[in-house]
Length: 123
Image (cartoon, rainbow, N blue to C red):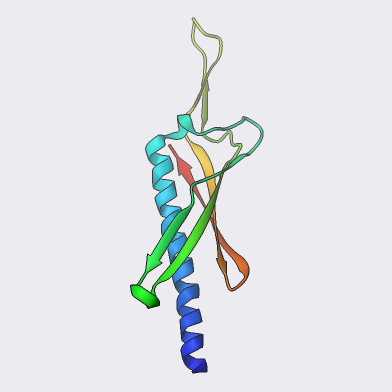
């Protein structure tokens, strides 16, 4: 009986983490489709906002597992993806062509909060 309970807890832990990885990838893909120009940012300060909630379910009936994920997105202050130029008509032209983002996905497991954090570049 203890072995079965331990196996179920291991399965829940693994499914929770795997689901968080899926959620991270899905959110990063969504941000890529929106594009860097629509992500809120500030030149010298990180901008953090809550992302959407996701629910993942595995199995059927009484054996189903359901996990709710909470997301947080941080658009990092970064000058690495800025281009600056000038012309005869404009003394200074600045363009942001990509932004660094950090995605934190959290979920509850056995009374505690688990989380993973992933970063990427949105163009």
